[in-house]
Length: 252
Image (tube, rainbow, N blue to C red; front, top):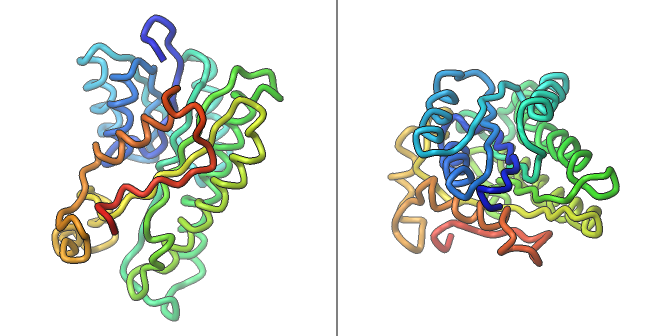
């Protein structure tokens, strides 16, 4: 979208990693960016400051996507303070400590699916209500951030995370077909092993570097390499692309 006609893209989980890189690239492409975060306000503010310093517009918006009330409040604030919504990047997600399925608690599974699946679906619901021509919107695009774990299964690491991303893949295809005539495109990006902080949150800070032997390109990916694919899918250059899952994984 040209800078003379600003529209808003909401990026969930945008205070770090892939989300932060996506927020910065969306701003560089001319979008106003809503930078969602769950807890780290300082990190989200830093992303917004970097965007403003580069001449863009951004607003930090707090919400735990697993909490419907917080999601509704976030979208209400975006409605009130920013230009019309034209894009959603469902990036917020979590992993957990390495575990076998026979050692996983229900609390762990509920947290995993609450954030990674239900949170993404609720955010998409709210975006469709604003962007779909069925609801009086002018169209838009949704990009769901999945993972190649969805097709690999992550045995012995986090099958629950892989299963949650498998759900996201199915959701992406189904929603894309559901709103295909309503001006809304829905696609997914499946990153491989990317050098971000998410590995540390799963108790394996060195996982990215230790996993290079499994990647055909023999290197880990960068957050900006995923962000470029996301921003392309949001753009008019991808106008005939919907229901598609793009692997950005170094060949894995």
